[in-house]
Image (tube, rainbow, N blue to C red):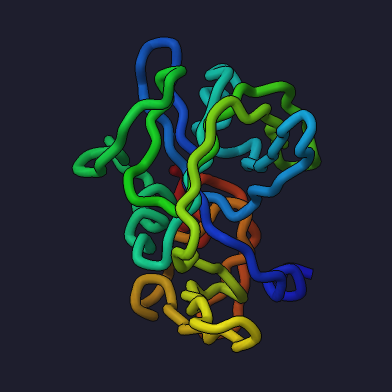
Length: 203
């Protein structure tokens, strides 16, 4: 089932938030999707075992940062356990004070409406309060355990092309989106379960 789910290509996003104490949170996901336009609702999922899950649930707000093709390094960074994931990363604040990443294709600043338990994951539903998008950019795509960049066609009707980029340059285990099906080139897949998928340790 994990291999089959990995055939569904997704975008890659970094979810950011800030706690009441001012601690910044960030995690890489590929479980982001729109829910409704009226009212404007989106959702994303995070493993209940993720160390940051309680903090995200208590934060009350979050931002979804949609990564561009040249931001694979940010996907890896926010999928890796680090003392400060934001160190050296350019950010700015939304009107509500949530940090968003610079240079992304789009971001959506949201108020958490509700959180559901969905098996081994938490489902966060948020109402979009502020958003920004940059048309024409190339998205970072995740498919079958591999990062891919999809070229935007220059003329209507021309199919785009995809360039495979194996996480971590194809060297061993890689940090990949939370909620993703992680596959090495050996074909072996691991289920999501933490902020870090496939790295073998909690975020």
